[in-house]
Amino acid sequence: MKLLEIIELTKKFGGFCALSKVSFSVESGELLGLVGPNGAGKTTLFNIVTGLYKADEGKVFFKEQDITGLKFHQHGVRGIIRTFQLTRIFSSLTVQENIEIGCHLQQKGGIKRTLLGCSREERAQLEENVKGILTFTGLMNKKKMISKHLAFGEQRVLELAIALGANPILLLLDEPVAGMNPSETKRFMDLVHQIRGRETTLVIIDHDMPAIMNNCSKVIVMDHGEKIAEGKPSEIVENRTVIESYLGKGYRRA
Image 1 (tube, rainbow, N blue to C red):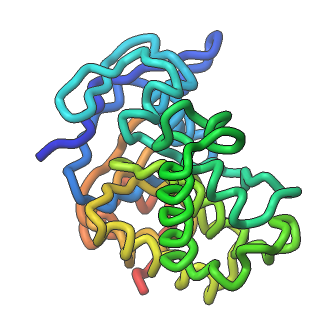
Image 2: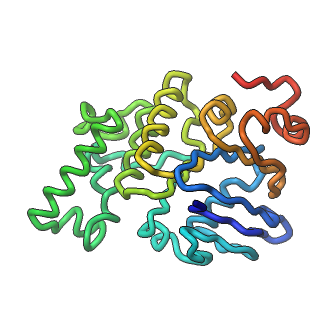
């Protein structure tokens, strides 16, 4: 079943065309990789899908409903959640407090009530949700730590944990393993597979080609605002256009 369908999205910034009639779909339960050189339009596409930008042309459908032009928070309550290239955590708060804030979309009254005025029952449910996320992400033993003191890889895991607090149906990750060492990357991608196993659909932008090619079920390649290829990783690494524009002739899949 198509969970997300993007139809001929176009976005211009003055005379610069960031996206030009980009179309593709994401199946429910899929782990899709979105790759391409810097400036290819990948993050712009995420920004349109999540309501941060408005498209000049084209449509976005989620669960067969037209969500084109909805605002950012309207996407969130529908289960479309994203992370950003730069780590966004509340650095002066504890790990546990960060995740509590991430759970606000699931609480009546939103973030203000989550932090200041939950009923006893709501607070108990919140604490249960946070405990589950801490356990799932391996952050339980760091729950009282101030977030800025976490190692870089752990901060990225915390950002993912905050996103999980919103109970995503579709999770969009923008360069989640950038700057990680190989062991951190492996841990993160293992966690991504576990999230997928919980019936969450994921789309990942990253330049770490082994992480994308060895983990994603389908890969879309963009360049200069256009989609230039789509297929299984084994097909993408043999695509001459992709090799010439992005991977380079010496690329070999691990």
